[in-house]
Each structure stands twice: as structure tokens, then as C-alpha cells.
Image (cartoon, rainbow, N blue to C red; front, side, top):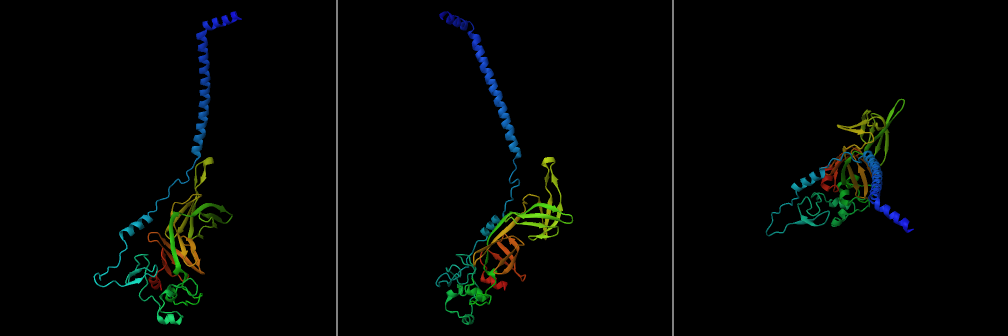
Length: 338
């Protein structure tokens, strides 16, 4: 046993450097093998990542243009601040004041706009006459009744007087537009999407979807949809083979406005949406130019949305037009309209 061990130790002593070199070589070979495997794995992972990056498509390849209307409106108001009516009686005599018809705070007698709430004040001849009040059983010595709704139709006595309706009969009331108010104007990309066409033996229908509420229209060339007329169609394709895409263009017209819809793409053309509130019951209407709304059985068509002045132009069934803004229509505007 000792002799065998001795021979082994002698061999290790003789071949010590060769054994060390062999072990180093084995370690290098294993390390090289691991490195080659890792390189192959990294290359495969890189190719997979590259393929995923190339397959990604931008959700918004073209950013929406910046709407400067809000900033321009703010700049205009900054350079034209509200000014109080100058008071000439500055020494001995106190200024005559009245209550604002909206916030009931004291304001100068001849002020046209309340300096507290910016509400337009009525003309001097706006209060009802004593004869009209007596005819309808209204106490002329009670000023609070002017803003009351006696018959529960949603309109005040002063509004009933201006339109010469019966304040005691809920079926007799001013036109609903008196209580319409603009809540908001939003500018956003065009809401119509061109989704495709269906060709028949005699007719071709074009599918248009509304982004806001999901409505679908199947219309022919020359027909109208939401105030726009289908004017032209051009068949186009982009790419080749499996990458070939239908990018056909459908042209819409309304007056001098021309909008081109590319299939399956959101049109960057800005369209103004207005949110109108009916103050009596709080109903809201989201409208665009050309859309109609029905309020208390009467139909109004939206002719124009003006984001610069924050107002909307309506047309009633008698083709009479009126602007509504962020505040309810004032007595002076009612009188001018009549």
C-alpha cells in the first residue's frame, strides 16, 4: 500500500506541470463552451427584441395640432379687463346703488354688468308694468316675485313678461333657447372614420363610423351624413405583398370645407364640439356643426361653433338665428332678439 502511494506521489511530482496545464486547458474549454452558448442565446434574444420593436406601431404617429384658441381668448381678456363705470360724485353724495339681478350684491345704478358676477343687468324698462302684473295677479310691490316661477314651467316672471306669455299657465312659456347655456367647447380630431365600402351590382355603399357614440352609416356617393356630403372616392394602396394596405380616400364636403378621410385612420382635421346645458332640467347636449337638438319639443340646428368668442349659433324652426354663450341669455339680448 505504501509502495503504491509512493509511486503515485512520484508520478504527480514528475508530471505535476503537465497535470496543471491539462486542468487549465479543460477549464478554458468549458469556459469557451459556456461563452459560445451564451452568445447564441444573446443573439436569439436580440433578434426577438428587434422583431418586436419593428412590429410596434405608434398609437399616435402624428401628434394633434395645438389648439391656441384658449390661449388667444385668455390673452384677449387680459388686454381688455373689466372696467367699472366711473363715478363722478366722489365727495359729498353717496352713489345710488341697486341689487344685481343675479347675485343680489350692491352695484351702481347705471351699471350694465355686475362687477361681482359679471352678469348682464336688464334695461331700465325691463321690469313688468303694474298693469301687466295686476292682470296676472302679481303683487307689483314685491320685487322678489320677478325671479320666481309661479306656474312651475321653469321660466321666471320677468322672462314671461318679456315674451308676453302667461306666468300662471305652464303651457304658455317663452321659447326654450332662453334657458340654454354653453358649458364647454372642445376641439378634437374629426369624429368620422371611413371604415370601408361595399360594392354591389348597381350601387356602392361607404361605411362611416362615429368615434364618439359608435354609430354606423352606410351611405352612397352624393348623400349626406351629419351635415357632410360624400363628394369623391379615390382607391389607393400602400406597400406590397403581405404589407399591402388599403389607404383609399373618401372626400367629404360641406360648403367650402373639404375633408379627406383615409380608411381606418383618424383624420387630424380639428372639429369643434360644444356641450350645451338646458338650465331648467339640467339636460346636456353634445353637438357639432350641423347637428340638431330637441328641447321641450322644439328643434334647434347648430349653424356655427365659435371657440374664440365661446359661443354657439343656433337656428330655430322658423329659421331665426341666435347666439348662446357661457351665461344664460340676458334680458337685453332677449329684447334685441325680439
